[in-house]
Image 1 (spheres, rainbow, N blue to C red):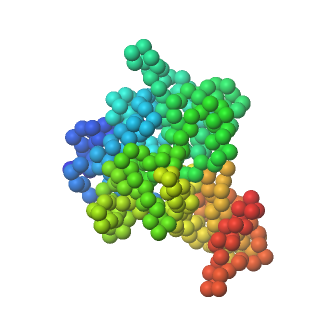
Image 2: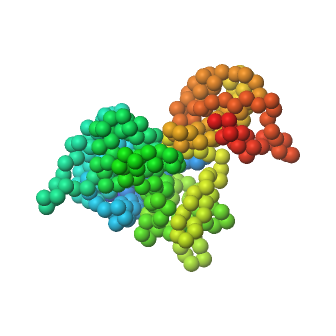
Length: 376
């Protein structure tokens, strides 16, 4: 099957490409910034989505048509069908799935193009006036927590923004941890928020408010969450070794995705504790703290700095610099943005008389993280 790269960020162009890739005869669609991809992919491939991954190393996730549609139909079975609004980038799995859900339902999604704002969201929502058999078609959308906070902040002051929030049958919120105070504020405005958990490798969110979608199983294996279901990716294009390490087959022949997250499953309810590796999710983007630290240590005055992650009201999590000497936070933020991108910019600096270390001489990252959280 042919693989066609879609470089445009125009959601309408992406939607046209996805219609052929998922519902038609192809070609498969390549999204993201992979420098090299093959011209041909296995039959049945719908989308190849290149992400930075938890290590910061690009990986091209191959998603079959059947995995994408299975996820979309499971979502419809859980929350219902209707008219979808796309306020997310189509270059990420959450945006892709909004479009796939709309395509599977046979209804064009509404599109919020350009810069996200409460005014733009309210305007797009007001235009979603679809009817079937004389009744209004339910409205659905998907947001990241930073977008939800923008809407909640506005909704607490502007009745029009509050009405837009309350107009949706369900608002899926994923990509990073949703702070409980923000969820409560959204609920107070009438928003029906559902927290989702998943990744590109699972065709997007597959656990809703802690409960896996139909035909999806989640288990904790040695503390790591693993996911099984028809929504799993085929693997990483051109990287069979990583595919074998991440998608494992048990003694019963069931195929599982190793999430890299720690957590528990108790009485069928999934709870996610955090990443196994040294990575945070800031604004829905994976940020390697090791990469941020390497850049920060190159800034004058931060040679001994350690970078840890801490909760952030808007972005979910953010890098925090812990250092013993005074230096310029602005300079460090600029350096990180140049090398890694805006999501990696440190939020603040915590000054300490000395860096706590383990017996091995390595920084005690757990103690430093606790310090950063305490100093917030």
